[in-house]
Length: 520
Ligand code: ADP
Image (cartoon, rainbow, N blue to C red):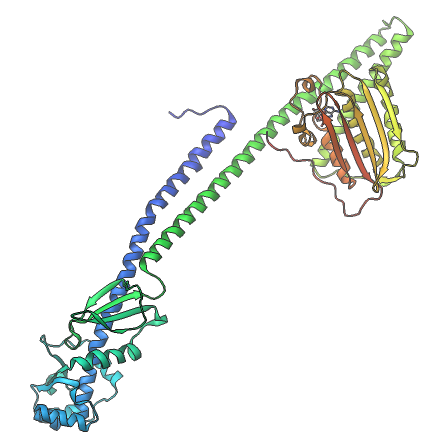
């Protein structure tokens, strides 16, 4: 039985390992295993190709020799051939302009003179055509080579037996073959021919300083018997090719593994982020429910007390009204934040920019917070520049951003109750700063507090309820104005949040999305 872990993160990891990681490891293991086999078969294929090239060199040389013999026979004419004596043939050779010592032997076998005449006269003289016609002819075994006299009707015309003089075959025929007839596309092969007994090079198609060849072949064709053919690839050695192939394959497999690893990491990071987000969302629901319940309970309690007339005095009644007022303020603020958040998430948040006196907004916000500020004993300091120029802002949105900052300053100042709000013009913007001397924020959290739902992992913070939306809305509002929000804070020392709002709004500024959530 497979036991599944109930922890979602554990489950995801099991899925990764089972469905992706293990098959990937198995696949890359198999691929690695196949590298030597692929290299071996490549090497084998290349050796075979080289062997084949040498086979065809020998066959071509054989055919060339036969075509030359036949052509010589035709050149000297039927009389000399029928006569057959060596001196007569030599003489006829010289007369035909051929070297006298071209052949060691050149004679006819099994032909009647009339047929020799018929076979030699009028036949094809072109060496190339002759060679094509002679392909596939198998000579009788022996030290001499032979060729059918009448190419098309050899049995009737008899056979020409010949043996080229060693010097002529090794120097002239061989050289002529490699220079004119050797079929070597792109010059990809280099062939060297050596001669026994010292294996001295008699011809090579290109120099090979290190003397390394891939394969060799000893020739058995009578005219070239005993010569050794060697071949190599011009641009590369088989060893190099195989080495490079193995390297490339290995690098490719490693690259694929790397990409696979990166892909796995991305999927894992995404899933982790989603899990984190869903945890934040459930925290958010719990926090918001609590935030809604507390003011509602207070409002109900004090409203009922007032309704039943159980208030000891006028002052107490006033205090109860204030509490009801304050709590309904808190409720409105919370609901505004949630509504705004949902509008932003749905891409429906709209801003109405108009030339506005920012100082006025600050005064209004502080006025509406006068009661909680005073009641909780906060020392309030304001420093708003008299010459603050008007700015293109959405009044509602900026008020809400300020309310969130002031609200936080009050919420997170359990000990020293101090609040300062300043505003001044700065580099074409209005800078509004809200300072407190509260619990402060650890450096590591400075960026993350602007993420949606994020609340600092701090026991003091968790005693204070919140939705984790306030600062992400402040940032959204600031950015929608083409501005920004900065924080300066240290734990135990308090915090200053500065809202920068450009005086003139640039048209291209688009309302950004809410700050993204990153995983812990
Ligand atoms: P909420 O206050 O509802 O939790 P916010 O987005 O307004 O959500 O704030 C995010 C977090 O930033 C808070 O949970 C708190 O940890 C921290 N924070 C914000 N303002 C202050 C402040 N003035 N002093 C200390 N911590 C703060």
